Amino acid sequence: MNLITFSGPPSSGKTSVIIKMAAQLALKGLKVGAVKFDCLHTDDDLAYERAGIPVKKGLSGALCPDHYFVSNIEAVLDWGLNQKFDILVSESAGLCNRCSPYIKEITAVCVIDNLSGINTPRKIGPMLRMADVVVITKGDIVSQAEREVFAARVHAVNPAAIVMHVNGLTGQGSYELAGLMQVGQKQVDSLKGSRLRFSMPSALCSYCLGETRIGASYQMGNVRKINMEEQP
Ligand SMILES: Nc1nc2c(ncn2[C@@H]2O[C@H](COP(=O)(O)OP(=O)(O)OP(=O)(O)O)[C@@H](O)[C@H]2O)c(=O)[nH]1
Ligand SMILES: [Zn+2]
Ligand SMILES: [Zn+2]
Image (tube, rainbow, N blue to C red):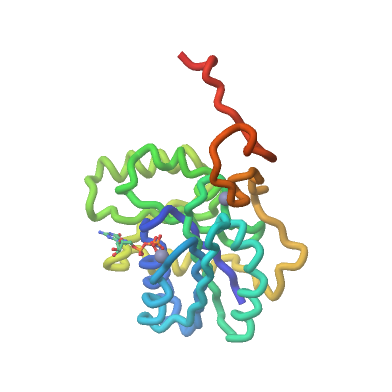
């Protein structure tokens, strides 16, 4: 089975793109399954079901969804293997701009949309910087000039990535994406010994553990203070 990890900011079009891509892969006789990792709520499972794609979902609650992803991806992989999928796609809510769910040697796709603003590529960290493929959506609602500036900003942050334009509504570009996903894919039957592409920063402070009180005496662990003097 192939494993592909998709990530990207909220509402960037991940589910839409994955569903359009899966339809192209189904035309080639490939069985695709999906898993959605999110924080508090998702209806993506319903969208996948409507599209005839078997799906599991996991909600991380108070944890960073990317940390939760890592702790659960092996169980999900086993599910995919039992279901005999040809391709298992994981979709992670890109809520934590410090982290990313990408694993070395497992194809990593970042979905980012033209509407998010031209500074977004610089803000979203390893999710974009460490992706193999960057899919840009919503090109239909911006001008050609905006599309070009946005793509150039993406390229500046991740020059090694293959950048593709996909319309999540019409599916335009999904044929090419499906083709790309089949190139050089490795069969994964276990993630034993695999490593993340990026060591996720530990943010273990009192507030990670549920503290609500404000004040220095409640702040323990990994606490960092803003330098007020350094700034004009
Ligand atoms: N105009 C336009 N709308 C799009 C495109 N791709 C997705 N959308 C719309 O954008 C909205 C969000 O799309 P989703 O596919 O749910 O995005 P997502 O990244 O999976 O969202 P979350 O998983 O909730 O973070 C939906 O209303 C889609 O119909 C596109 O290329 N063009
Ligand atoms: Zn989604
Ligand atoms: Zn995180």
